[in-house]
Image (cartoon, rainbow, N blue to C red; front, side):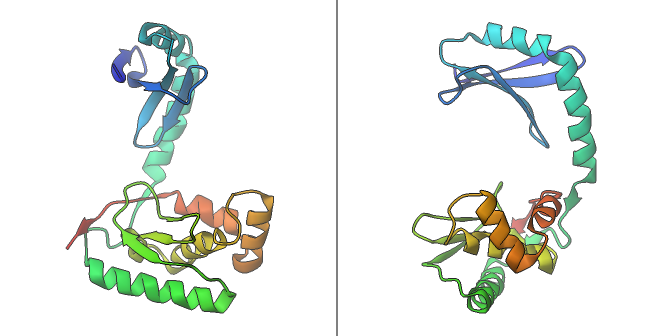
Length: 189
């Protein structure tokens, strides 16, 4: 069995999920996803459920914070139907403008309807942009594009990455926090 859901008193439903990467039982709480317990191989679901029950006060405290975050999360303005062709044209145009302005280069660009990521950059410097970016405020759209372009030079999120981002955009970590307040929701046309 790869996963199992159980209900804990005063917590609600939690997901127990087998993980090949987990070395220990690990509890995480994510907005719109709830409580997940990563269960390493060799540990029973019953043992993981027992650990989660012992950590119920901690889970409860953090669930309250997450629920508050969920209520603050903003739905994208203009969410609904997006014309993928128009969105691609707009995003690629802005990507090219920022590439020239800041002296970046990239290999290829892909515009996709991603559920969890705003963008990514591959090891081959291919840029992936989420079609939903067209609904973000301009400063956040630019932030995501510049973030991915910066990954063509720096492949991690270390101090150097954020320092370089700040040189270009100013308050990169603040923009990153602001971006996390938006959720992705769209219907493509």
